[in-house]
Image 1 (cartoon, rainbow, N blue to C red):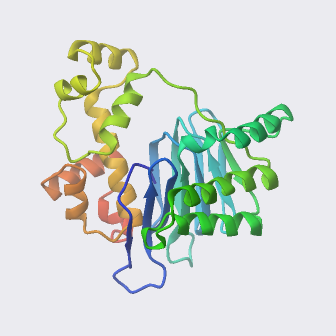
Image 2: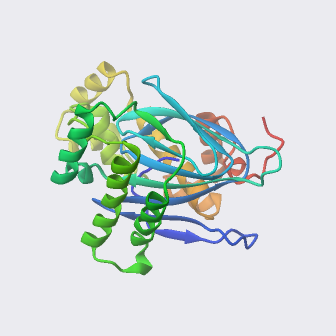
Length: 298
């Protein structure tokens, strides 16, 4: 799952299952998502700009980071992922299990600048307890699980909580991770990479008809400078746009029950068939496979 700015949504599965896919987001605080996936899939080269905590409820999840660290979580376990990195996900559905299911909490990097949290995290770093960029929580403590639930609920629009209260509840999860599990998350250093700036610009407006000229104008650089800097970073506008659109589409497939045609429109594709082709090119499987409609597919 990716973690772009997404409208709050809750959708009950068509089969009437008690558990519902959902996404709730609050700018400056974070995003909570309840993910259901109908079959095991490998999802490669997903950009994580913000840190996340993933609690696995059914199936297994393996995360491999470009920096070399990895973790595999079973039900009742969790994985913590630092921001500003690219990772590969494998969501597996063992024999006898109906589906893969996990709950995500994505932390806005603004939370990591909280003065008290920064001080506690720095203390943990000095004691050498922070660890790798992908970490397993082998047994989720009850206090962390309860805080996670309160934080996710606080982001739901029907709760109508003041933003400062939601912020405190999400921040509480960070503190439980640190105090009970020794996991500290650091605010990423400010990046001058133009590719990061492009991702931040386009992610919230994926249905916009982006051109090199428009992006350059919004970033206050010339089109030639924009292209030159992207080439120096080994990136291209086309690939950045495709990756952002496909990452959001994957999230919507996993965490909502929206029709594929609606998802295609929301990420900038008027033609569902063209969207499906691009999605398969990016991930190696069809959009419908995410919900388990192609169990026989490779």
